[in-house]
Image (cartoon, rainbow, N blue to C red; front, side):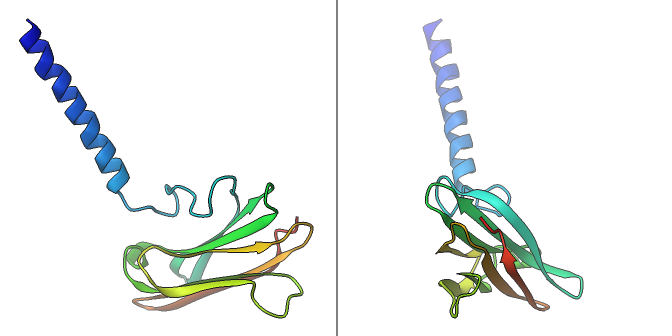
Length: 146
């Protein structure tokens, strides 16, 4: 009888290991990803990056009360997710004369994270994604005042 239990237990371990490998091998996405900004950052804004009704991606803004920082990411969506197309994201405090942090390049999934210290002030964020049908751009000014 022990011989019959051993393969069943082994089969269970193999099945669980396969599930864990499958879950960790899946690329991170805007909706199901672990937070690329780090622990303690909560989503405070999610905006569609589009042009003429075509969605190119999503701009996410996150906040950490512990650090007093905002974080931003620009995710591709649809055909622009998983493809190494130009993606960029920028962040600054409102009233600044230059961007505090910028990330751009040919990324498969997202640009960022970028950070700015923004306790008791508002932020400006901008993102663009070049896709197969053009470029989507989004800019938000004086948002997420904290």
